Length: 367
Ligand SMILES: Nc1ncnc2c1ncn2[C@@H]1O[C@H](COP(=O)(O)OP(=O)(O)OP(=O)(O)O)[C@@H](O)[C@H]1O
Ligand SMILES: [Mg+2]
Image (cartoon, rainbow, N blue to C red; front, top):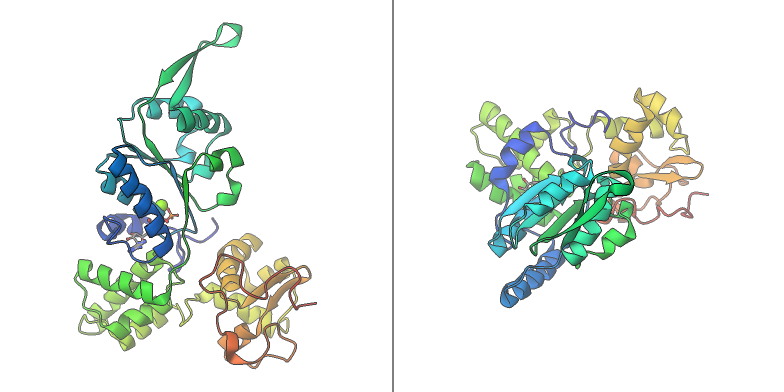
């Protein structure tokens, strides 16, 4: 991913996140905040398995980065009182790598396969059989003399995680007994995440301070926790260590994360679109040159959240700023701006799926 690592509002984990996340992870389903539907469904799956004294069905967790997939996989193991083995698609290059892991699993163990969409083809095919029949064929030798030695596996639960469920081949997707679709968190849920983290980090934060941070966290607990740490720094150096609305707002202004969670790059894109191109439509490469970034950076780093928050539309004729974008920059939208001028839809689709903000369809009102 381009340039994304050093952004305060990236949903991907950086080094510091990885170091502190272990301490902030909820350890049980009851402690896990939000995602009510996934939590209820999963709780039924796990309870039923426990009652039967068996292993739960294979579970697929899909959703954008930082929403709690890894956390949930660990909770599944903890709730089952089972050990967990953690690996990822890119780590499994050869079918043999997977065979080695599968053949060493203990009965009931949870195998967590992160980024499962990035597994190699041969490994994937071995996984099909392991998931369905709890069996793998170990190939011994090469060429015409090669033989397949079947190996029975103990019952185990595969938990797959992916940010790109659409990339999974259907035969793989079909072998999961349960799929949990994780969605962006509502501000009130993020406030609860923040209060919990603040308690664990021993940072005093009041309700308004938490609300201020939550509003800038892009629906993502990982970002909320990261912003909390930066606000804590500010509170300790420039205030008395306590986080209230004023301290949170001042701190995040210093870090250039605005009231909607947009950072410098996001605003630069909107600003160029609106001031240089009258709101568009303008081609991606032209827009990228105008902000001095690579097209991939604009497309993959800035645009997804701008689209999700209903400020930018990708149309067949180019990028278009919606009325919400003009308003966000404190400007008056021309009557032709998509989304109209009424304040009705300040942030449409902010908590919906990526790219499904209302009015963003291919045949939206941009023609
Ligand atoms: N429901 C939640 N309640 C409290 N904290 C949460 C919740 N979901 C996630 N978090 C926090 O957010 C951080 C990121 O979560 P996690 O690592 O599980 O995300 P992920 O979906 O696996 O991300 P990625 O796609 O990058 O692997 C964790 O440290 C965890 O503390
Ligand atoms: Mg993860």
